[in-house]
Length: 303
Image (tube, rainbow, N blue to C red):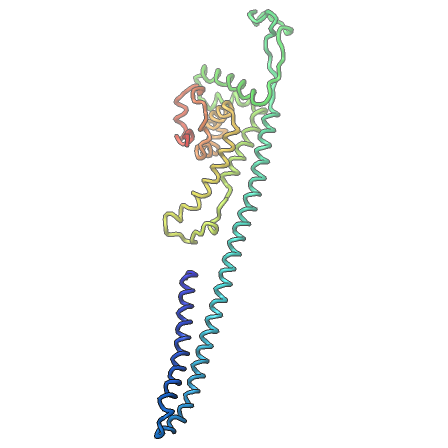
């Protein structure tokens, strides 16, 4: 029963109680004026005072009704207070839950950047001293220079080497990728594991409980059955969009190939598709356009 319906019922009880009192008092007063000048009915007039008992009985009844009404009003106030207290508790609980999630999320995101900054490897390049055109077979050690590549530049440099191998190879993509990945696993293994952990953490987070959404225990309506998932997906998508915004073009390309291999096809690839992680993927750099069809289209949707 709504608060408006309860107030309407209380008003009806008050009207009935007041009407009862008016009728009893009115009857007594009417009897008094009708009989007070009738000498033959003085005895009846005396008996009239017996109606006082009925008057007090009626007043007692009205008092009981009024007491019940007050109790109903008090219970109504208590229910409203409990409802407001429960709502405040739900809001506070949601705020604390969101704060705990964001603390962990941004810590993981910070760790992600630290991992990228810590990635490096040494490579040899030809010195710019006139030996650039000289055949490598006759070049000596002094003709090379050791350069350390760091951070996101590693993804670009390694990807160019990967694509060169994949473009020339006729072997299975998974085999060739894993073979090349083994040479870069020290640099990229930790990166992919942490990135997967962040997206998985978001995917498993519950931002809205069924209680907070007022969903029945056994929902019958279609809207109630999907409401929990829809509300939570919307919030999760917001955080995975933050993750996507941190990824460079070459990180996305590496992720593209990694999730087609045994490294990520089972667990990582479905999350990539679910949260449209490849929205900004430079498709023109994929060596075989047919590989794009191995993903669900929603992985690339620009929503």
